[in-house]
Amino acid sequence: MTECNQETFAFTAHFSRRVEAGFTAGQVSTDGGALLLREVDCRINLVGRLAGCFSDGRSPLLVKHQLCEMLAQRIFGLALGYEDLNDHEQLRSDPLLAVLSGKRDLDEPLAGKSTLNRLELTGRSARYHKISYSTEALDRLLGELFLESHSNAPEQIVLDLDATDIPLYGHQPERFFHGYYDSYCYSQWENPRLCRGGSSSLTFPGVHPETLRREPPSTPQGETGWTSMQA
Image 1 (spheres, one colour):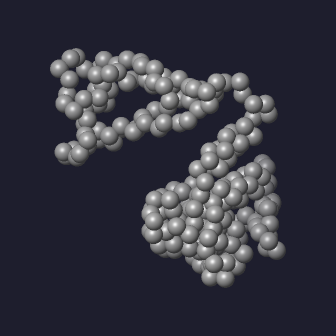
Image 2: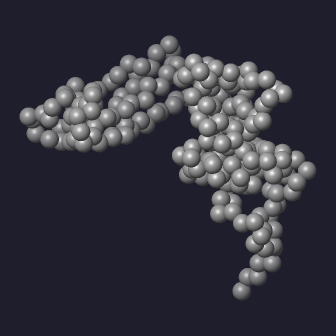
Image 3: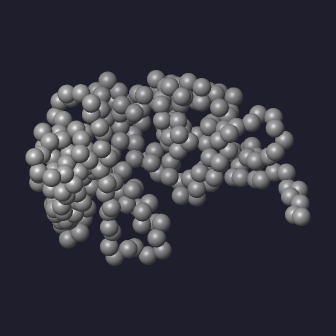
């Protein structure tokens, strides 16, 4: 019978503090697996590079929550399944999330829901304009991260896009009957910008000229087709 007598597992240090996974109780968190995500971020510096795509025009002397910390708090929170900003009213006092966010003083609370909400409204509201971002830098970062994940740059990139149907049960504006899903719904498509010789051709499954209608079709159900779309 194998005896496991290792009591702690060490991870990357947090400034002058050790980061260890142990089995001696004390202050316990059920999100310990996020430390593995932190190790990945320490290796590829995703949050730091993402913060480099933003410009922070706030007065440094008045800043309580650093931009990089807020981005990490929101990103790691989403990765852990905390989609609602209201969750951060409690999570802001979670020492593990503080470690994930890179906050030096673990006794100080993280950003609250209102502060994170202002960050998410960046670029969508003229009221919150002190923090801005570059869409070109974000696009470039996504491309760099993808290429870095391969030992050699791929010769071809195939995008497998699936629309997500949002069923409707009322008379919402701009509703359509979707023949493929056989219901009234919103069906959102992503429109990626690809560069391959100056243009790109995308082929979407299940999209027939008669698929999207405002009313149910009179033809037999289940008919779908393929159509090529220029992006």
